[in-house]
Every structure is written in structure tokens, then in C-alpha cells.
Length: 115
Image (cartoon, rainbow, N blue to C red):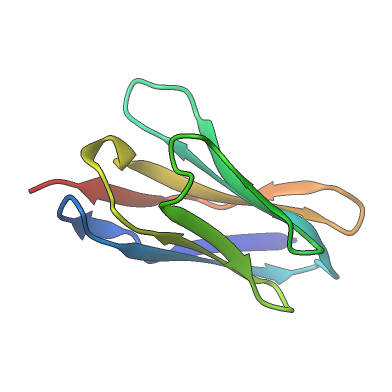
């Protein structure tokens, strides 16, 4: 059993910042890659960005220069979000691929950007 728990979401004003965390636990030995997705109301889930085991990152064009993905040496990752815009409002999901490339998803955390 593998569990992913996101935290750090909330309400923030436009231009503000939030830092999301993703903690993996359970029967997972290692994390090959970690990713963040988001889903706004009425829209499909979209990729925000990913980070590999070696630390390489890639981002959606819509968040480049504003969002940063990082991870520690264990089973925790982060999504630093700066210069937030109302269009960043969504439920943010963490996903990881383990040492056998099996994929797991968290339950999501709500981010609302509004004045």
C-alpha cells in the first residue's frame, strides 16, 4: 500500500505564493519521478511539471518561471508557486512513479487564487 498526501493548498491573493508538499509513505522503496498535475473546474487534468530522480525538471509553458518543483533525498517533494494568477486556481495533484515505474496519485489539494 502506497499513500501520497499533498498539503499546503489554500486561498491566496493574485501575485501571492504558496508551497505545496507531497509526502509518500508505505510500500515504496524509491521514487523514480515525481509530478504535479492540476484540474480546474470544468477542465481536464493538466500537467504542471515533473522532476526526475536525477533532479531534471520540466514545466508547462503556463507556469514556467513562476513555479519550481523540487524534492528531497527521500520521499517528499515540493511545488513552489509564485506570482500566482486567478487562472492557477485548481485542485493540485501529486503523482509519483516508484522503482518499478508503478504510478500513484494523491487525493489533491485545493489552490484558490482570488482577491
